[in-house]
Length: 236
Image (tube, rainbow, N blue to C red; front, side):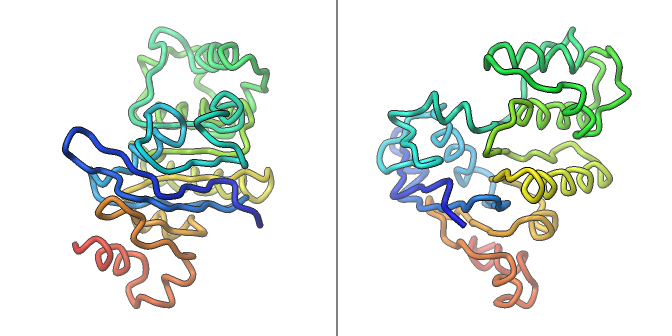
């Protein structure tokens, strides 16, 4: 397996506040990487720097062998992004929203197939304004994957989903990696779910990735599994 994301000595300050202090992170091809950390630890900040939405202060970010500073447009063609609260055209349907996104990306795709994959089949032309929180979460994932990217970077992708929805997304994410060759980097506060789905875990604490290990190794090291590991690293 090869590395598709490599972050070295990444730093970001906001005024006098050092949020990211020298972060190193490596994601391998075709794996699901669970990115964990407390609220305010800087997970979203790292994701924004990875996608060029926020300028880093120091360090390097390479995605698919390309540097984000000089190849951002090429990188964006090959990644799907879900960061923070997704914004949609409320008066339009899911299909219409995805059509606009594809036009913006200058891409073509099977929209109905993608809608079915995320479990939004049967919604017809219902406007997004009538969607539940869980339906919006599914549409956000559909928009991230609609252009068939190699990598998905997903910030709290199952937020708002009920237990069945979370399980559906778990099956989908694993299928995308195993059958379609995707790589997924996702953040979540649901430790149990991450433990179920992630191949590798990275825990952000005090501005660095304080722990990066295979999930199977964490289970061997900690009697209580990921939860014990997380609280040990974060001091919870």
